[in-house]
Image 1 (cartoon, rainbow, N blue to C red):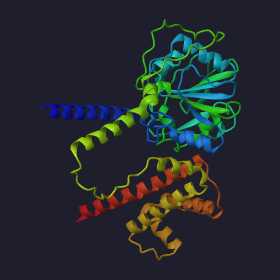
Image 2: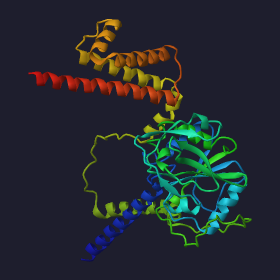
Image 3: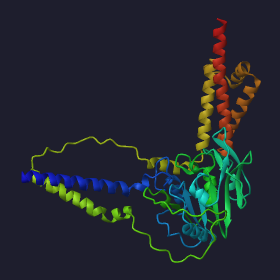
Image 4: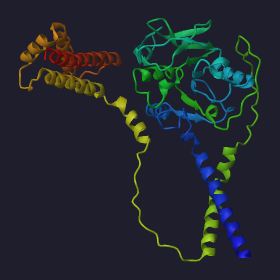
Length: 419
């Protein structure tokens, strides 16, 4: 009886240690699971941007403590969709002091979030009918002139306010990107964080916008704040709302931050694992040596999410990627036309254009001939395409293909009605 109790106690101790080890393993990789983290390679993370900047020679690092702001000037600190409560007045003043010394804060957050309100940004409704929104830079600067389209998921834009300098506006004069000047630095605000998510970073002209943000004089290093993504983040004490940002004051010596639960696990995690191994060996020794022999099992290899990051990092190094996509879409349109006109593809170009004009009209034939010639000439000249030209030509090809598909439906309907 006593031996059974000892065995049960050993089993319970092993289970407790095993659960503790699992918790430690989960928390040790929490940065790779938290959405909007610079260490998260999943579609909702922003590790792609961090890797892209590093490949361009711009240091990109996570900032994991609130009171350890980078020294010097020329730094950029990004807050990407912060989930914790807004910063208290002390931290806000420290950030403003840091910005005024020649640094930059970039806030990617919805207008109704506590962080946007803390920096005195608000929003207004601006719903768009299309995914890609044409934008107009409000001044000329390196990389900013290249921004002509954004994939805008948010239904809100920045509400114009005194002190906000416009950066990008749409055709309806909605303000999409703006900043506030603070001393020698600035606070840039974008109300749509999805722009820099891993799944959207390569769309439209997002890369050009990001390169403008981290261009001279804010290209010393880019820091991604991870404290606002902590799952154990505690709420800050509420502060009195005012119409102005807290005044900039001289910073004192920051107090050391308290040791968090995650940090404590990081210190003792190895000891926990050693305990689990020792207790497992003791249990096997107590139970005897009658165990089945190990068997070989086929391991199913899983796709690594880092493949997505590596592929996207090489995306902008491939000069002919856009041209390959346009040639593919042109070929698909050509095949659709042959199918609808019931042609075998051995006909000459002049005969194809003649049959196309008879079936679809002279305007359709002219549009098809123009876009096919433009794409082929660009491919023969090995010319690099801008984002604007790529989007415009893609829309034209999709529009022509949609028309030819609708023509096929209409023709079939008319034939059936005559019967």
